[in-house]
Image (tube, rainbow, N blue to C red):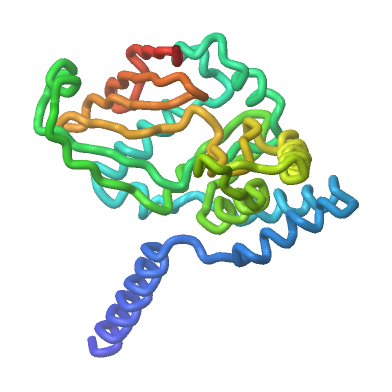
Length: 268
């Protein structure tokens, strides 16, 4: 009996340690500086091979959250299930995104980058109309968000903080302020910036930035937030596809989530 109790205590300790590791998130294989150096080296030669290794290492490090993290409670389970149902970067026409160049850009990419966090709310209401009209909303955030996504034709990357920071630093360049106080980029910086965007375009479906601000690295559609009703049977996903903003209504039917309708309003 004593041996049994000791064994159970040890197993419980191991389980607690594993859960603690999971809560800390993924372990970094490289620092931001090391990742930036890898990208800079690709500018100097042997570009295809060096970028290939960079993205292969990133893909290898892109491990989805385990089942214990996903199914820890009804809310997190619904959050992951809704995102998985909604997120179809190669089929955004179903969401009402019709005349956006990103549809073509996404279809030509080798990798997609999934956002690393998602905001969500549980509303104390039941119907869709009540959800739409809710004013006071408590917003929560799921960090270290790595949903198990399968996309045919491309490999999945999770936009972990170190990669987000390193790639933006690589694309950003230095900037200076003009006489009016606004950021400006001189011609040499702009030329280098364009070269860097061109290097990555075949690997990630990013749009060319202005070299002075943070680049949108997440592969569209980007989920701005998800609202659930009180019993987690309805969800409204607010999302962006380039400059177009949309809302998508999902409902839980027969134990699974389905898209009921989606509305997109192009930027004027």
